Image 1 (cartoon, rainbow, N blue to C red):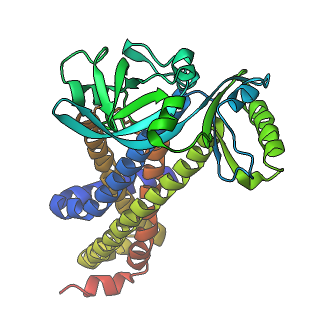
Image 2 (cartoon, rainbow, N blue to C red):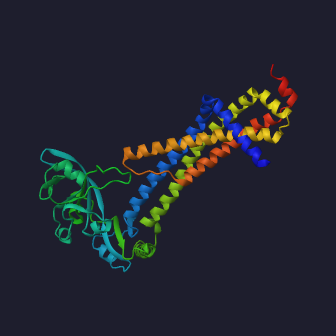
Image 3 (cartoon, rainbow, N blue to C red):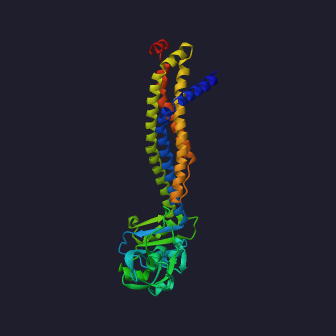
Amino acid sequence: MGTMIFFQSVIMAAHAIMSNKLRSFLTMLGIIIGVVSLVVLVSLAGGASASVTDEIASMGSDLLTVNIVDDKGNPMKLKDMEQVEALEEISLAAPLGQASASGEYKSVSGRVTLYGTTAAYGDIQGLTLAAGRFLKSLDVDNHTYVVVINQAAAEEFFGAAQAVGESLGIDGRQFLVVGVLEQEESVTGNVSERLEAYVPYTTFMRVADGGSDVTSFSVKAADEQNPDGTKAALQRLLLERFSQDEEAFTLVSKSALMETMGSVDNTFALLLGGVAAISLLVGGVGIMNIMLASVTERTREIGIRKAIGASQGSIMMQFMMEALLISLMGCGIGVGLSWVIVQGISIVWEETFQLSRGVLAGAVAFSAAVGLLFGVYPAHKAAKKHPIEALTSIR
């Protein structure tokens, strides 16, 4: 009997919705907008965060970066990189200095980000070359004026011409271009447009006039499966050098960065989901408003049903089912529109975004909850109507 009443309620609710299509669609509109907001925003945030995480992961979990804040009167020098590399947990170490410089080739000029480093840096960062070679140990030992530039700098200064073998002016000094890096995309999927130039660290100290102190360097772990062990060994070395002061330096590993990114991504997704859920609640208010109007319009129908023996439970189930169907139909339309929007954005941004099953399940569950929550009061009001009053209230 209960099953029969349930199916009858579903049929009657569907008939009521289809008998006034325009009003039903306008009622669903709030739910549709809410679902689209929820699904699209969370899907885009998830896709973007996954791209960032993949980019970080591609750098390898064996990469650690050190920045020295206070050298405690015992600054690190280039020769100290040998002491760092001597640790059995570390395979490579390379200093990194950075400065802004003026680049010039014939009539073309522009600002470049100048990096001073050693031959090991290319292997640590996994840099790949489109032409030529990277820096060598002899370049550092001999203070050679050679430079490796990225693809953006090659196109900016040399255009379609072959950059390797040409001479590039940097802050008034001429550097021989010995290599061009392959074009790389940023974590957002866009090609980097920053002009970059890598020179030997010893030469960088002359050009940038920043002294001979090493304030930043990167290392590669000997065992990629044990980055924590490498971090601990490096931390012990630095604490011994800087008077056991943990505030004297910062040590960042890619594995820790990925964990932080995961935490930030989850928080960001929850915030976006919460904002979008407000739209669903607004849609629920619209459902309740229309359902109250529907109860008033169908007072005579309610009176007749109760007069021929319909129980309060069956009346209440009918109107709650109607509110639930409106909400779920709006959710279905919203999910369909979300898929279209996400596919369109994927094509425009040339990035793959996908609808998460978890997000879709959450949208359906939340929509159903909104429909039932905001359908309770109108359904209760309809069920409580007295049959005689209901029949005599319509003239």
